[in-house]
Image 1 (cartoon, rainbow, N blue to C red):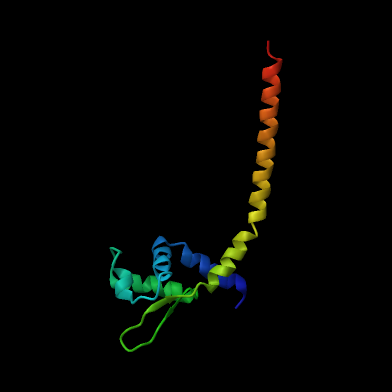
Image 2: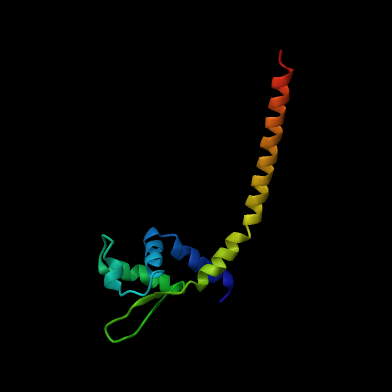
Amino acid sequence: MPQTDELSRTFAALADPTRRALLARLAAGSAPVGELAEPFEMTFAAVAKHLQVLQKAGLVHRGRDAQYRPATLDARPLRAAAGWISDYERFWAESFDALDSHLTTVQQSDRLLSKEEP
């Protein structure tokens, strides 16, 4: 499957604040769905659906230890997302540099004008 499809799934999964919170929790270590559901005011099934979206994006893997199926974070898809975002870092850096240059010019002009006033 092309990388853009993987990237689209990653960003779609990250678009929901509940899923981002689940990933943040899983960054601290594996956990079963019941434990992951505790801080949320939603059903166990709703949390399981969020985990399915994260699984399809490759961000979460579920273990198979009898009844205990812990969810584990797999941050590898985040690397591609971070790489895509960092491609735009240059754009923002150049934009901020241009803004800084413009503001410096405006400040210098203001100083010159204030010196010329009687």
